[in-house]
Image 1: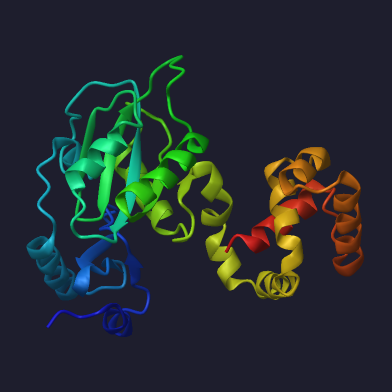
Image 2: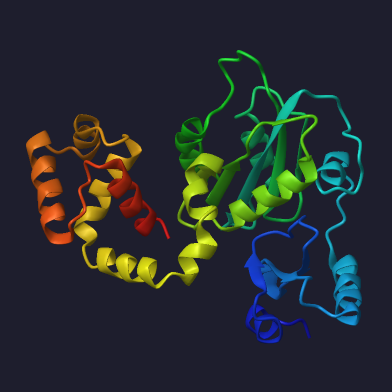
Length: 289
């Protein structure tokens, strides 16, 4: 009988539940039952016999992907199937609520968002990759903000939950397998409620995670801010508009004086000035977990 996630984590407490197998060689990824994702086990604490056993299980249960680009991105081959100067990998995670929906039709709709692709394919039933070359001075090159409206429409049309991660553009001489493996980990860390993300939107959360998890100061401040949920949208709006009060007030549909009052009240309660970018960044960081 296949082990579920809690059973694996009782044996390996540091194991992570991920939506798709990680290509990072540090981890051994094994599928969970009932299509609940994968368990990723860190090799470092394992004995040689444990490693050999888990690697054998992983090889037996790994999805068989014949796509040459997948082999290149995961380090199975050293040569790219096609030449390129720069490319990015777009990751898509989708949960179909209706089993009758055609995955082929869905894939065709997604590829319509890209002016040109080197490859696109399913890794498993819910995880797909799109390899896109950089198009210099191409006005049709999609940016993160361009995907939101299209994804919302597709979720309705295909009765699905969709998450997309827009990878960074990497050069041909960059260590693509290692970079792709880390972008997989970044995407895995994205909250299920966030439809679209990229390196910029996730960097503050991802690159500071170990320190935050171990910090009593951080956890105490986070709990304190959680007790004032009415200020969350103010902090987020100000951060997204680089502290510009006029732009933030417009995004919040507030009069500028009303926003000014809320900022003053927040400072009175906490001692943090949301007009100061250092204070604002700290407050935003406390919110994004």
